[in-house]
Amino acid sequence: MGGLACASGGSCGSAAVGEALRAARLPAVPHDALVVLVGQAPLPADEPATPLDAEEREFLGPGPLGVLRPGKSVHLTHACASALFAIAFAREALREGAAPVAVVAGATALNHYEYASMDVVRAVDRAAARPFDKERAGISLGEGGGAVILESAQRARARGLAADLVVAGCGTRVAAAKSVASDETSVADCLREAMSDAGADHLDHVHAHATGTPQGDTAELRAIEAVAAQASLRDVPVSSHKGAIGHLLHISGAVGLAAASQSLRTGIIPPTAGLVTPEATHRVRLPLVSEHASPLTVVAVNSFGFGGNNASVVLRTGASSRP
Image (cartoon, rainbow, N blue to C red; front, side, top):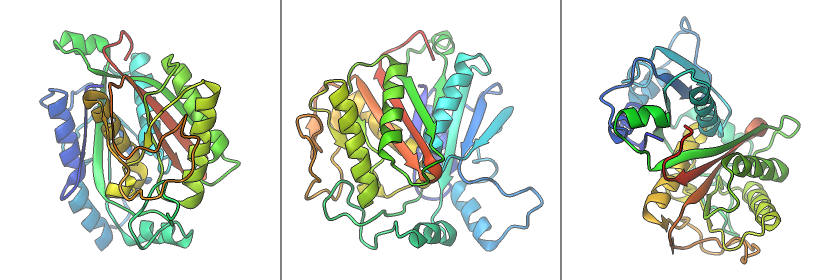
């Protein structure tokens, strides 16, 4: 993994791409890069812009996320799991030799339409989200941008770099029979698939999707507990960033990857903001951390969305012969 960044504020999509390029020590998006844009399906080119469109463009950045001038690009939409689906797609493209480097990028701006769509299904809480808390009542919407740069190990070595983190495994499922997010069976299947793909027999941490909804958080905890029990895992700390910055919808997976990456680099797992009274778990397997520090080598990130979109990614420390 060459570079990763998240940003907020004006032109946050462009800012995130710029930060990721600097982290990857790239002066610009390479001409042979595959660019994967994540988010809602774009409007047709001849569709008239609305004042809201103009406001969002100012927030997200000019052009295709500002600094992106790709030779080839795709647009992926998998609801709130879009970013992790894009990571899996980009990694496969690198493995197959379709591109030597890939840029995954997206951003979300608060707007009336998305807020109303969450409110109508009673997913939004007027108070700040409290993932995993017994008194949680729904999500808080946030806004921001994220970008991840993936590079083949061969290309990184040719540039004199040795990646400290590797996207080791991915699991993606579209469980169309169930429209809700965080279906317990699908969550467990994704996590097992990602671990198997990574060749991982343990996890040092799970950065959960956990948005703060009563149903979703419970289903995810039960799924992680089932996977941990099957693999005879103990003391796998679980946390979520969404109590701190809200739910960034389709780009939220990039924030999860950023948090997990920093945990791998520092050995520190940040607490879940707003968590006061934790939901009951089998704590021998899954402690809901308030603060945790220890060496980490394998971390999983979860993202789930409406429409049955489910994805998990496993990150490892150290270089690898595979992208």
